[in-house]
Length: 362
Image (cartoon, rainbow, N blue to C red; front, side, top):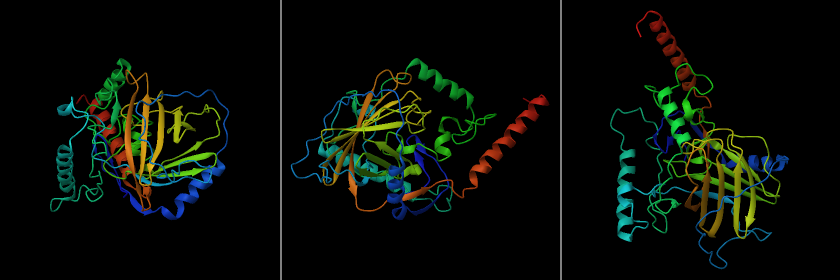
C-alpha cells in the first residue's frame, strides 16, 4: 500500500506516484548501514516502559546466527484499536469478544464508505488507498496507550497550550495545508514537514497506525539496526555498538540501540524540531522497544517524554503482523507541480491582502 496521504487528525490530500521499492530498498539500507559513521557525544538516558511484552513461546522466535531474535522483514501495524480510549469506554480497559466483533464491524462499514466514491467525485484520489486495518489487538484493549492506565494522552503543559494557541491565532482562517500568510520557513505551519513530504504521518517517529501505508521494514545486521517506513520513505539507521548520542540535531532525532534480553531498545533524543507527533517539541525523548513474540508477531512499544509538551510521560503498545509482500516507494512530491502552485497562490493572496490594506479596504 502506498499513496499520498491521510494524517491521524483527518484525511489530507496530496499528489504522488508509486514505484517498486523491493529492488532497491535492501541495497539502499545496507549501503547506509555500512556508511554510518560514529559521532562523539554526550550521555544516554532511558525512559522505562511499563508493561512487559508477552513471553515468547519456546522455539517460536526465529534467531539470527549470533543468537538474537530475528527482527528482519516487513511488518504491518494497521489496527482499528484507537490510540486513546474513547470517552464512552472510560472505565473499560478491555473489550469482550462480542464487543470487539461489533467494533470491527463498525470499522469495516467506515472502510466501505471510504471506498464508495460518489459518481463524479474526483477530488479525493486517496479513496482507493485507505487501509486502516480490520482487527483490534489480540488482547482486545480499548486503546493503544497502556500508561497512563486511563488510556489517554496526559494533559498539555502551560507552555504547550501557549504554543498551540499562538499557532491557532497565526493561522486563523487559513486552510490546514495552506501556507501561513507572510511566512516562508514555516509557511505551512506545524504541518509543514508533512505537507512537504519530509517527515511525519504514521512514520513519526514514533510509529503510529494511520489511514494507510502502515508498513515498516526492519533490517538487522551486526552492530546496526535500520527502520525503513513506507510512509514518507523515512529511514533511521541505529548504531548498536554502545556509542553515546551525538550532538547534531536531526528531524528524526539521534537514535542509539541496545539489547535488553530479547528486546531491542532504541533510544532517540536531539530532535531538530516538531516531529508532527501530537504536538511534541524538539525536547522529545523517545524510547522504542521491539520484541518478537513468535514467527508472525512483533510487539512494538514506545514511551515518549517531553516536559515542554505533556505533564508526564506516556506509553503505547502495538502488535505488528509479519507481511509476506514488499513495501513500495512513497514518491510524494517527486514530479508534483502542485506544491509550487500552492506557494504561488499563497503569494498572490498575500499580495492582494497587502494591496487591499493600503487602500483602506481592510
